[in-house]
Amino acid sequence: MEILNHQDRPLRILKIEPSADYFTPVLRTVHEGEEYQLTVKLEPNAPVGRHEELVSVRTDDAASPELRVSVNLLVKTDVYVNPKRVDFSEVSLAQLRRDPSLSDLVSMTFMVKKRAGTLTISSITSDLDALTIRRDPQGTSGSFQVVVKLVPAMLHPGELRGTIRIHTSDPAFPEFLAPVSASIR
Image 1 (tube, rainbow, N blue to C red):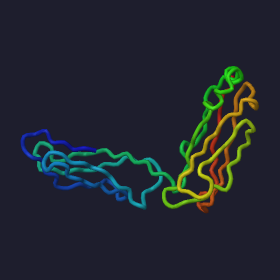
Image 2: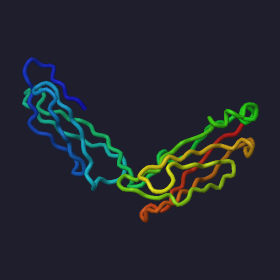
Image 3: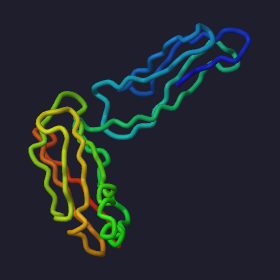
Image 4: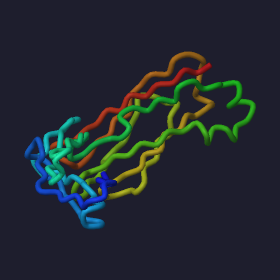
């Protein structure tokens, strides 16, 4: 966030204080008295989840001695899948069958990430035969891209519901389940 002073006199920032101990505000002076940049750094003890916090910025300005800056944080688990579900929405089976080249467009991509270090995905399976699943890279990494495609020949009109099961080498996060949905028309 930028803090800009539009007054005639310089603005001094005297102190910055976070409302929680799991993040640290960092102030960088861009132009002394005129422009500052405020960022936050998460501490390793940050609790998983969404957090709405504040940073109090104390200034030497009598009219605005304190600025309260909202800080919205999303702390993910050490290993996570993003997005958490694969939703193809509505798919026209007639269009896919008329133009097979459209099948490349009926795909979703999600990521499997480890915040620090690496892991191995030992397997990715699904209870749906109408999917192909490809991950990149193979082997060990801190971040995997998983591409899920619908197989037009295996689709039938109606609701498609199932699960992708991801097994990892991380002992704290050995398995993830990603719900899959589509309305096949």
